Each structure stands twice: as structure tokens, then as C-alpha cells.
Length: 599
Image (cartoon, rainbow, N blue to C red; front, side, top):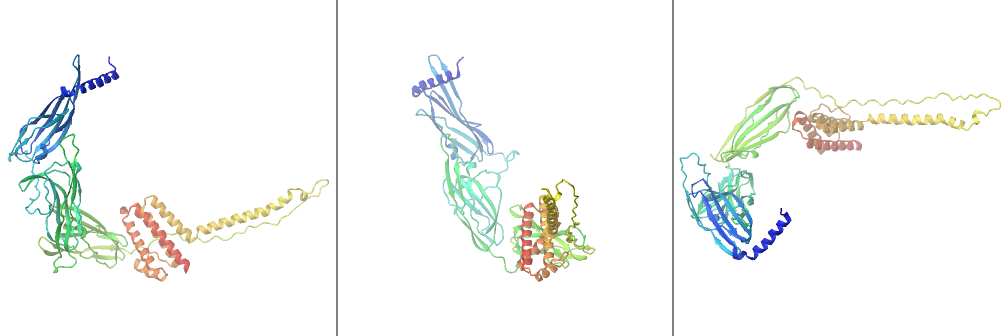
């Protein structure tokens, strides 16, 4: 049995001997084949380039004809390099190696596609394969298995609009509308025209600048090319970008020049990929202002609106949710709706949600507003009709839509807000320690040392005063701690600590209840007046009279209103917002206490 090391040595020695006689013994065979040789448009065939080498070393293999046929789409490429080593008595070691390129190709258009011979170089000698012709006939349009042909890109005119022509590859920017109204959708697409093969994963496009536009970019899910004719020459065209752009100001707006870099796919294993860079040209869009005959608050597009309440009756002081939906074609993120004021009803800031989608090529969707309404007085309350004005660019006319007026009832009298702070307990009365008179008794005995003369007697006399001093200090400390725990500052700190605990427990309702209690307690301590249960309108003059500055008053009102909103809609509150609310509350309480200290 031959050891592995011995075998390796024999192979190495044989390789040296083989290298000495390689030039004389080198043989090679290059084969170019296709299976099948005749297909229909849309079908695939297998193309193979193979070189078999005996007694020589393969230096190069070239087959570049696939590059000149953009009508043929390469779906897959595999490479194989098998090698055989044999030994014979008297003939030495023989090495036989092969290199095979196998391509899966799909025909996009009909025609006769000729392939020149592949060229291999072995030990300085050149070997050629046979030539090859593949016939592609038109597909049977009545066949049900034919795949649907995608819509080709716009034909390139003789003026080369939106493009700077280059023979191998160039970029083109296509604008659907060159003159639009402000806020009207502009379809922008960037195409790559190429006669060379493109390595799909190497394509790196740079988006053109679009200053003055609000942009919604469509997501491209595939990178597949189509063949079009440019001045009679077939080019493969790839879509790099599709965008729905909405101009935000009138005048001439410029879409910047796009850029792209990609690698040319090479059919030669030994060739390094060639990096190609192309730059397009800028395109100008003329944006017109809206006609002056319409309402100034009109939005561009075409919309419908609807409104609904989540309940028809509620207890006074509880919340009702009003939802308004605006649906249609246009840039829904431009839509703005103001809720009219309602007597006896307090409204919180709305929550806005957007859902965008395409209706064919037109971008649209639905924008939703949700207001929390809190009736402060009992009775029947009405939500007025909400109107939305729009300008339809397709008909160049103004329109208006509105919701129906909605009503709901508030039942019962508003319950006063229960105090969230327990009354401060009165400080305990001072209790002085009482000691009885010190009495000393001694009995005279003969031949004994009197007690007063013993060494420990002095310590015994000092013990009661020491005990008295220790007790007095202890009672003072206990009283001071009780008094400190009952002060307004201690109550304030306790409320903040409870809010922190609710934050750690992820309990938004308890958290915002402690926040309201902390701010209210600070105001009660500062003004020495009851402010609990007051509406924001009644609270503001109290704070002004108490000497608080305008900025602090606005912060207090906004924080109380935000806390009310969060208590009614605790499911939409996140931890980060609660942390920021706690920091704001601590800052406001410190400012209120500083104002109190200067009075």
C-alpha cells in the first residue's frame, strides 16, 4: 500500500517530468454546443463551451459572442473543471483536464443568432471550436403557456429626450408630465439602456436630486431587462427607479441627473469584470400655480370624507372618540383638517394615521384623524360638519366634500376630581421625659467601705444623666423624622417616587395619575388655594395671579392636558414618552418651588 506522502511525491515528480515535455505533447479540443438548436421566443436552451486538454496547461479560454446578443437573456451560469491523472509503464504520468462553461439562456426575440468559434490557449498554442447558429422562431400566440410580455419602456425619439446617448450604455430619465399644477403627481422613471451584459448584483444607482418635490419611491422587486430598438439597434433596458413626485412650489423645478455604476458580465473565467459608470441628464418640470378662482385652502387631488363617533352617549367628564377619514387620489400627507370649537366640549390633539396605496398609476390612500372629546357639561353636544376643499387636476375644477354633523349626549353632572394626595397629618405634640427624684440610701456598717467611696459609685451617679441625654436625642430624632415625612416637600417626593414605580411597572394610567397629582400638589402648596377640579380656562387666571410666568403656565396647562389624554388612551403611550414626561414634571415642580421661595 502506497502511503499518501509517497503518492504526493510521485505526483510532483511526474508533474516535473510532464512539464519538461508539455510543449511537445500538449493536445486540446474545444467544443461549442447548444441544446436544442431551434426554439421559440420565451423558451430556454442550454449553451456549453468545453475545452479538453491532454498533456498541457490551459492558459486562456475566450467566448465573447454572448455579449453581442442582448436578445438572449442569461438565466444561469455554471463552471466545471474536472481533472484526471493516470500512470503507465514506460509512458509516465498522463494528466487530462477540462474546463466547461454551461449557460442557461432564454430567447426574448426571434432571429438567427450566430456564435463565432471559442478560442483556447494551451501552452502557447491556439485551439478553436466550431461555429454555432441558434434559430429562434416566433412563439405561437394562441398557446396558453406563453408568459405575458411586460409593457416596454417608452420609445427613445430621435432627439434623445432625457438621455445622453452613448453606444455601449446610457441612462434616460422619463417624466410623465412636463407641465403640472403645484401638488399634482409627476411620474418619474430612470432607465438603463445597454448593449453589454450587466451583472445584476453589481448595479448601484444613485438617486437624482429632486429639490422642491415630495417624493414617494416605488419598490422594485426584480431586475429584468427588455429589448427595444434605438435607431435600429437592439438595446436591453432595465428599470432603475420609479417615483411619484409631488411639486411643492410653482415655477421651473429640476430633476437632477441620475448616476449608475455596474459591472459588465464577462463570459471568460480569466477576465476581471469591467466597471462602468454612466451619468444621465437633468430634466425640467414646469409647475403652475392653482387657478385663482377656487378656495385658498384647497388640496390637490380628489377626495371623499367620512366621520363617526365610537358611542352615542357618555357620562359627563368621560371621553368620546371622533374619527374622520379622508380617502382619494393625491398626496394624502398634505391634507389638513381643523376641528371646529364645540361649546362645553374639550378636545385633545388628534392622532393621525396614513395608509398609502396606488390606484393604477395614481398614488393615493387614506388619512385618518382621531380626536378624544371630553364633555364638561351635561346635555346634547353636536360635532359640526367638517369640510374639505380640493382641486382635481384631471378635470381642472374645484370641488368640496363634507361630513355630516354628529351628536352625542353627556349624562349626569361631572364628578369632582378626587384628591390624589392624602391630607398632611398634624405634627405630633412634644413629649418630655419625666424622671422622679433621685434618692440615695445607705446603711452604716462597721468595718466596711461606704458605697460612695467605692470606684464604681461615680459611674453609677453619671449613668442616669447619660441615659437622659440619649433618650432626649433619640426622641428628637424620631420627632424630626416624623415632621420631615409630613412636610409638603416629602409628599412631593413621594408622588414622584410613585410615578417612577408606575413607570417601572409599565402602568400608564397609574403613572399619569401620579403626574397630575404631583403638579396639582405643587400648585396647591404654592397658591394655598384649592385648584383641583378646575378646568384649564379657570386654572390659567389662578396661576397668573399666583405670580407664575407665562412660559411656565403654558407648560403646566399642556402637561395636564397631555396627561388627561394619556389616561384615556393609555394603550398608545410608550415608555420613552413616559420618561420624558417624568423629566418635564420634575423640572416644572422645581420651577414652581423656586417661585414660592422668592415670594
